Image (cartoon, rainbow, N blue to C red; front, side):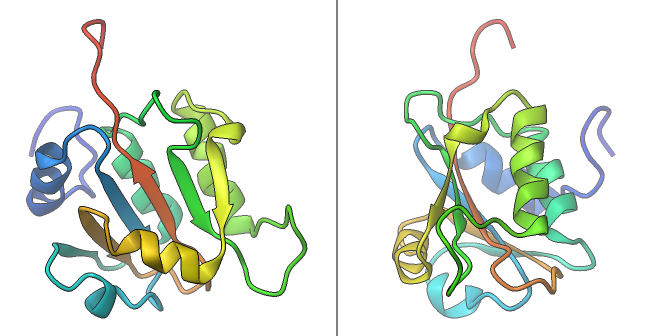
Length: 148
């Protein structure tokens, strides 16, 4: 155990998050996500038993968001819903982004197939046990400032 590190973050997850450079993206997804096929050739880690909100809370506790892009956070838009619709699970994670110093404007809904394309270029995928469909997020890594 390490002091101040969320115990949900396994050694493998911490290693991957640490290896990532600024601009790299990590994807945190639900249990239904096609992580094995879209993650071919990249690390696919499992946080079994954790829901999406809890996993994102743990990741965001150590992960700086990229301040040099307008929207370092993306989530999969729920198909067949109106523009602006956000599920309760998605809203929970957006609220976590705000609690960790981000803003709602830094979060964007991405159409399902466009989301899949973006996942193909991500550094790693972290799969949770979340059963709510469309509970999938991408976080773009920023840099740690001298004051942090």
